Image (cartoon, rainbow, N blue to C red; front, side, top):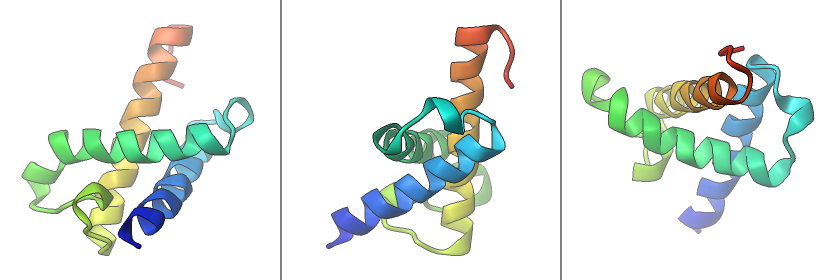
Length: 89
């Protein structure tokens, strides 16, 4: 059951991050899920130790865990945009 919640929340986080970074038109549902989950891993690696929070990958569905996962997804999309277009946005 946690796996299904993980995919749904990852998809929502990826979708929200793509809306903020203006890449929503280029991404489908599957890519939003991937961005949400991989972004949560990135946020867990970079941001979670600084804030003392978990991520959705560590089954932390608190507000802090969702925020760390969202920030990680934003960082991931900024890196992808930087590589593809030469600009983070």
